[in-house]
Length: 323
Ligand SMILES: [Zn+2]
Image (cartoon, protein in one colour):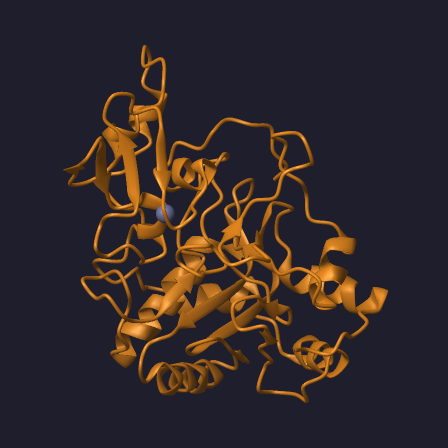
């Protein structure tokens, strides 16, 4: 068990400034899913309503004090910019690759912070002001491809994953969230620290504050004449375009328009859950059950909510939201 610790208002303020680029966020469920045992992330809603709640200082304090665990979105779709980029690696040999990346980033005077994770690590780069997601991604993908690092998604099941995962988002999209650093991971029931400082909240934050932040001028210089290596231009699964959702005359959402290969099992169609798939899960393609007699009813056995599934297929359930 982690010992409780207090997060001062200054700590909360610094965390907000470093990590928060939009007020939408996710929470890691406190209880494991009864079947998979995993602690899934969901977008919290106000009690008794469908209205998503916005991230506040108090929520960050509770995250830092270990009472809840946040997930943070990289891109603010109002600007297409991000405040940080994070490289997630959790395969065998992941740490060597992250340390290599950290070294080559330092050759550009980019000070990246390495954080432990459950199976590998996250490498964080902080920006002086929010910068275009597309340009940040071009920089990291170009560097990774020059170093020959495995990149997940480009025909590889294992490799680094770059947050932001998209160049741009539509206004109603969220992209992918990553576990907020310095909180307690519910599955592991422990905190994962940055290697660069003592394992203490104040010292960790002081370390992050000290790191040089990348400026727009630097980033533009790093990527001058470069483009996204082929194969990485769009991380959005091509078959899941949002066009069908906004097509005139289509009165309701039909899940069957948005899934891959289906099988018939009993009274259900069974297929890969789009939300699980986005996280690289459900390789066996049987988490999502869709009722044959009424496909408006579908359920992911791994615990993805309807909202998560709709979001994953690019047809989020309409609701008012804060950017
Ligand atoms: Zn699922």
